[in-house]
Structures are given as C-alpha cells and as structure tokens.
Image 1 (cartoon, rainbow, N blue to C red):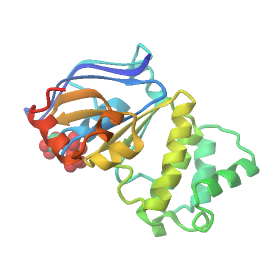
Image 2 (cartoon, protein in one colour):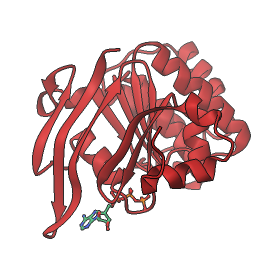
Image 3 (cartoon, rainbow, N blue to C red):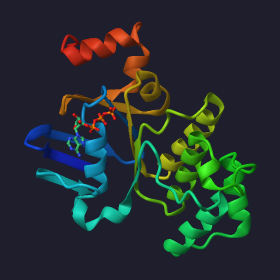
Length: 237
Ligand SMILES: Nc1ncnc2c1ncn2[C@@H]1O[C@H](COP(=O)(O)OP(=O)(O)OP(=O)(O)O)[C@@H](O)[C@H]1O
C-alpha cells in the first residue's frame, strides 16, 4: 500500500533532552493510524512536527515524497484543546473558515454538515459557551471543509460522548475512504481499537512497534496484557 507521510530517523531535543529518538514510520493512504503511547511518550511532539508547527532537529519528513516544508498545506492538526475563535458563534466560525480558504459551499451543504455533526442546537451560540465535545466536532467540521490529505488528531476522542463517538467515527471513516489519512494520538487502547486500522506504539520517544494490525489485537484475549507485553518487549509476535 502506498504511503502518504514518511518519517525517517526523526530526532527532537528540548533543552538538551532527547524527546524523539530516530523515529521512523509511514502513514498509508486511506487509513486511520493510532499513535499509541503513555503520557509524555512524545505523541504531541511528533504530531506538531508532522504538521510543521515545530521543526525536527534531524531526519526527513515527506508527504507523497515531497519534503514537508513544501507541502504543509496538505496537513491539518487538531490539538487536544482545539483552537477556535471563542467570541464567534459556530456559524460565524464556519463562514470565517470558508472566507479564509476561499471555499464555496452552498447554504444547503452547510445545513447538511451541521446536521451531520449534530450541531444544529449549538451552531448559533458563542463558541466560548460550547462543551469541549462540541468544540471538537466544530473544529473537525471546519478543518475538513478544506479537505486536507492528512489529518492529525491529538487525543481527539477524549471528551466526546459514546453517541457522538459513533457519528465522529462515521465521519472519519468516510474521510479516509476518499484516500485521505489520519494519525490519531491516544493513550487508550480501546480508542485505537475502535477507530483505527493499525497502531504505532511509542514509548519514551522511541517507536516500539509499528504496523500492528488492529484486527490482531481484537483476537487477543487480554488487551491490557497485550499492551504491557508489547511495551516491555515480551511479545515476540
Ligand atoms: N516545549 C517543550 N519544552 C520542553 N519539554 C517539552 C516541551 N514539549 C514537550 N516536552 C517534553 O517532551 C516529552 C514528550 O511530550 P509530549 O507532549 O510530546 O508527550 P505526549 O505523548 O503527547 O504526552 P501526553 O499523552 O501526556 O499528552 C515530555 O517529557 C514533555 O515534558
């Protein structure tokens, strides 16, 4: 399968401390990949580098074989607490996003999207008054208006209730079916299992395992044990 993004031997230090140590992985086209690791493992740092928000100290990052610096417009990052203009209403923020990216959507398309994201009762309210889950859905809606090839989601699922999770999952799956890709960071195995096609395990700034098929984990009898065994190197599968 062809890959969209490639990380090769990427390193990052903060204040002389090695945070990412020669990490290499690929994000295939049309797939949702979980970036799974404990707190402080280096997930957010990796996503920020992948989005171009911060730069790596060394290594190579490409999108469709083009260096990231020349193709940043193909990537969008949604942080764990999405950045939105809190003084605007949801609808004003959608209009603002369409203007910024010079996009044309009909009124009917916007209404359809608002209904799809179950935001009808919230869209006229100031963003500052919305719940975190609704802010996340609004952020996803506006981000996907511009159809990025790669979506980077940092702990996106936490704060979203089970019913909305089903909606969000449908939206994410539909988005990757169009050939786009998602890298979704999480520390929850259940999230990786429910949303993703494969898993990359990161620990202490190093990639422990990659291309783990989620279906292989589904067959494991004890998921927690599988995770611990993999992290400690006790899993030789
Ligand atoms: N700007 C910074 N300056 C110094 N150290 C930093 C900076 N950003 C992150 N770190 C450190 O880098 C390490 C990795 O942090 P990162 O936020 O990437 O981890 P994470 O896997 O996303 O964790 P979490 O699940 O808790 O969000 C941590 O030890 C963190 O303290």
